[in-house]
Length: 352
View 1 (cartoon, rainbow, N blue to C red):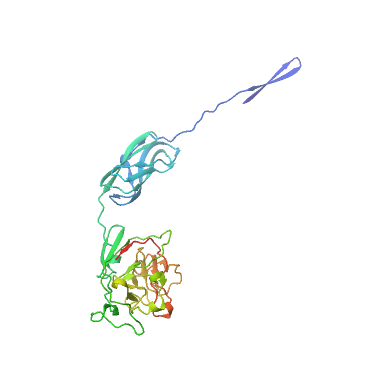
View 2 (tube, rainbow, N blue to C red):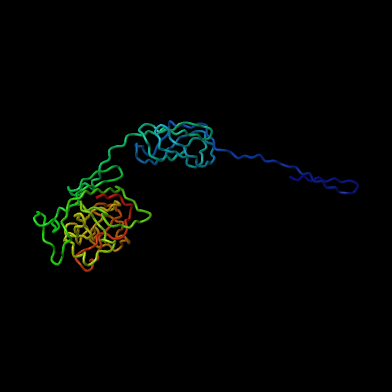
């Protein structure tokens, strides 16, 4: 601040300037509270041993000074290990309020996961109870649609289908003398040998998700029909599309027998789906596959490059991504390809 003074001396005016320096003290304040009450913590979800956990913990405090604070460093659980807690950035109330911590991970044991938290000069221990996981039941959407030829089991995240891979319906591939044998379609031929029982086991996610990178389907089983028969894509030996000669080997079920007597479907047929919206089965990525029509009875026109789209079905009324078999007669035949292109989700396993 400048201070001016005027002096009159012998007819002269003398002006002097005094410079006065003012120093302002730093008033920056750090976030502080007077008490942190870990016994009053609440959690947005319960924790089960061995199951991935993601939730918020809300810890009450009093005596907040209204100052903003940044996110905290990771706090590792003790007791039941496998979890971490991280403070979420925010602004303190002027008085009472709550701190929020995100807790993620998979608890290793039943018991208590403890987190030593410290904030604004106060410390306490947050205790999260980890309980025994409830037994998971197999969703009825699978048990009510697969035939008795398929044995079904599940965890909380995956479902496994086992079958011997035989069709359980009429086909010339049973061989003459079998009760389910019938003559081949007129104009069609047969691959060498008869079908035989296999040992199939397909595991897929119960709640499938879109894959960031879509993986191309390959030769061999890419899914399982409701009767336990393997679903194949539109390719044959050499990873080439089914040719005119091979096309003549398919029965009216859209299947034929391959090496080792492994019977499988490449096409729709009389025993899976014709010109309809029937559920055919599930692919290895956990998404279902249907006939040529939608549940409305109309052939969908908005299928993506992999033959699917999102929408309601008779089994998923709230909507799900699902595949449809092709609506184009293959090489002008009576057959329609079940699946071409890539998986929409991440494929599970199929052993045989």
